Image 1 (cartoon, protein in one colour):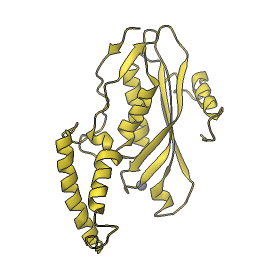
Image 2: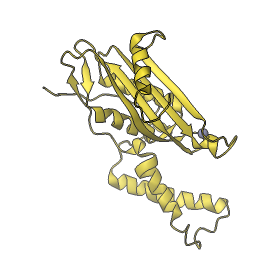
Image 3: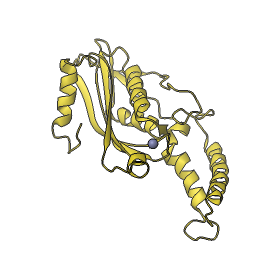
Image 4: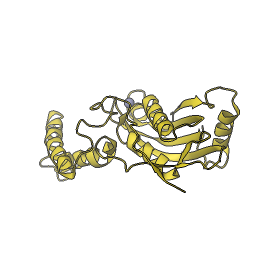
Length: 229
Ligand SMILES: [Zn+2]
């Protein structure tokens, strides 16, 4: 099977925003080190403002650096580190639905900087001469957009639009996210267990009584490891 390597422009929000890439994206290792140093100093000041004697507390004296590293290397990695190029393949006549369920999602709400945890379900139908992608690429797309500040609605759209661009010529794409937000369970109303469900659909998945849409949601109920939609 001939590989069709293409570079896709899949970013859809303004550079610099919490849910967009950083202005110098992608950062070199040296730029990341510099950013970690700056953020470490700034977080120390943040703890000073909270009257935390972090410098003398053995559990806290390296916390500013730990937090800075966690943001740059993990929590917001999608803002600084590029995903390897996505390879798509000709669908070779397969005209059925392709679904990947229960892709783990760890993200962070842009409003409160608390974690969002959940799963992403992605479905699409390749076009006549359309493209399919390796399954792990869908996981990587979730990581690229999830590892940033996010609001779930926009995150759903970003993942949808990226999948749609990469499967150029598709007949439709659908993305559903089921997630719990720490900012709801730990602060404010402090309700545990409430989950948020968002769906973005295009093409054949758009109509409510469409069979492809029904097949997608039915498949999520089958042996889905207890994740409810
Ligand atoms: Zn929040």
